Amino acid sequence: MFGSLEKAAYILAPGTVVVGLLYYFGSVYTKAYYTALGVLPEDLGFSVQSILANSASAIFFPLWILLMCGLIVLLVLGWVGHRLALPAHAARRRTAIRWLGAVGLLMVLLSSPVFFSDRLLFPLPGGWPRQFVPCLVMALGATLAFFAVQLRLGQGPEVRSPQVRTGDRLWLAGGALLIGVLTMSLFFDMARYVKAVGRGNAIAETKGGYRGSPWVVVHSRMPLPHHAKNITPFDLGSRSGPYRYEYRGFRIVAKSPTRYYLVSSSSRYADRDVVVLPDNDNVWVEIRGS
Image (cartoon, rainbow, N blue to C red; front, side):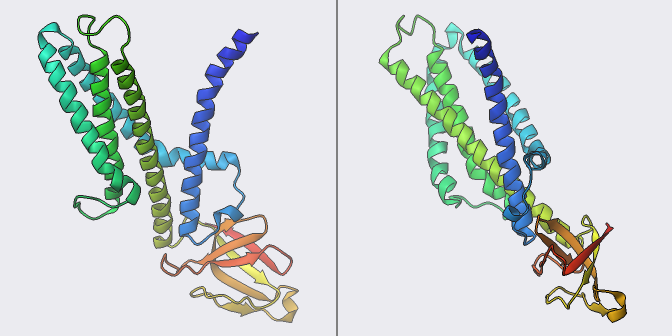
């Protein structure tokens, strides 16, 4: 029985981590997207399934790039390590350990202030990709330094004593720390990328006139105060029933359990003229499709 539970833990634990990461990145994307549109994402009440669905498209490209780059780095470093493992290359191995460790740690240390302060220590061309450079430099430095640790711990018995020495324990601890630095930097960069994609998609939606959002016609019992562009009421008169005023030209960008979030089709990102209507008997929102 206990053996079955242990096997189940090995299977469920990685799956839980993956689902947790997908949920986090989906939340980052959703918040960045709707915040850029001027909508409160906390008010929309998304389900776990919808947030997980948002994460899939947001992280596919960077995850594919990271996997391809990781495979290339693994193959190159594996080939180098295999060559340096030969007894004839013992001197080159020691030199590689020193240089890789020094260069890797230097890259980590130089990118650390940039990583936390979000300022580059070296000039780069403008544009949003520059914000990912510090974390990538840190990740590359941690990879090189970890490879140096692997080379050091992989030395043959003619160099290392049969028992694990205190120095080897320090190298092992340093390798674990470098894995943590690598994971943290890639995680932070991934979160930045997902946030940038969410905000960029929202801006693209506004520039396209909200073509992905359905048209709506708002019927109201009384005139609606708003600042949306090119939206004027039509007074249908008292014979039209309780909903006397009609508004055309709105698109719906979000719907919470208690509110409608509407924008004019002629609005742009700089306008931020989101009209919030309560979902009650005073208005009737008729959805006409996109």
